[in-house]
Length: 308
Image (tube, rainbow, N blue to C red; front, side, top):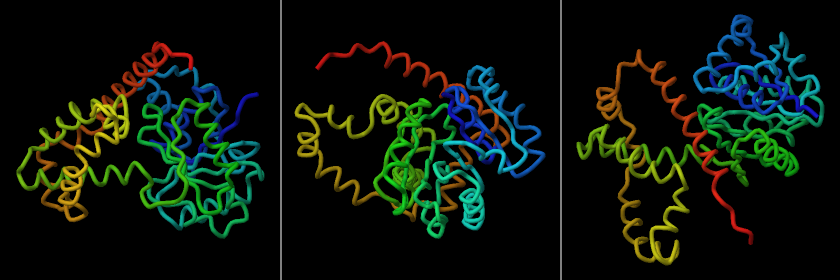
């Protein structure tokens, strides 16, 4: 049976989600509140597929809807990608909760708002959660699934299963926390990076090289927990016994919110390409991420497994 999905909002993230669901064989209903955006979205989706190397034939599964009611009719999942403004979310979710069938799950791509901030007064709050992707989700597969205090565990089970079925990598959280997981980690790394750059300890290029060709090279294959497990002969307990005190000292000395200064921003900006090049560089990034994703998928498929 073909799954029917609604994607609400057709900006960069909405278009990427559309590709994710369409290439998995889902029937996708796409709606945006702006008629002019709806009129041009299929051409933009074709360009998204061209850049990432996805088969444009997948877009045959996409229907652009004229109304929110049409988009939500009979779908099992709604992926909402509207503005990151609380009053907009509250209005939109009130509308969707009134329109969608009781079994339809309502998920937001929000990276800044937890679900309880806009769903707490709704009758259907048990079916609402955050499904936060990494930009762009059609080439970076992780999705953080964050429940509100009211989200039904069965909804979380269904969300996790659906994300796996469409070849995403779900990270199931147990409760709400500001920034979810990825942005909290990113904030700490960025703070220390900006601090060292502003102090003149390292250049922006040197900092990026340290991540890209050092930590990032390992983290492409495994996360930091699996990494430290291999960095001492006795595994993670051995690692923390050997290096824990040093890491604790460095963590206590690391920069925090004070590192996000205009001065640091200007230093980094001066080392970056002209902002006019951002669209072309973003496309280059997406092509490289898509190629990396295909390589890693193929590598995983070719890795022999051992019967336990």
